[in-house]
Length: 115
Length: 111
Image 1 (tube, one colour):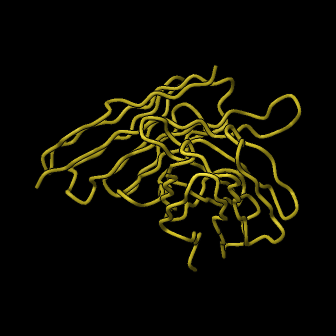
Image 2: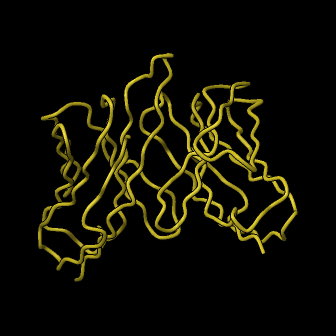
């Protein structure tokens, strides 16, 4: 069964204290892995797509990496405005009928960055 | 561009009432989706559409209906509201069934 597990559930950092969030997945053929950021009371905001093991993407203080079993979202020298819930989702390759598989979402990591 | 716009932002319904959640996008995306988000459950796909006139069920379609008469609009209809439909509903669109762009959400309470 396709599955996505994110850890930790919650993380509290001091401003400038770098850390990583984990997204472990089990999927029958990965089409793509997605990272989103969600602020309270808002919809998820797209951050990155990763397609193959070894791929890396960067945006400001965020860097996403991908292996065959997991993805990491590295946060370097975070600021209070990086506080949010970070969601991971995976999409498997087309099924035998040629249909794109739907996204499987993790429950997210709630990140708080203290000034 | 406004992106994906959802209305209303908040709504309280009585059990058995019906309502339509509106969603419109101005990015000319073919793919559109409706999700619900419940605490501890993650995002669950209700319905999706790959283009005007084409819709299909997601993981949790029971109690909902959709239509897609134009590229821009993708309304979600709740018939005979039940307490189990209390949730936050998100509409999203995507150009290629890859990265999705979400609306601000509708917080629905059924009492």
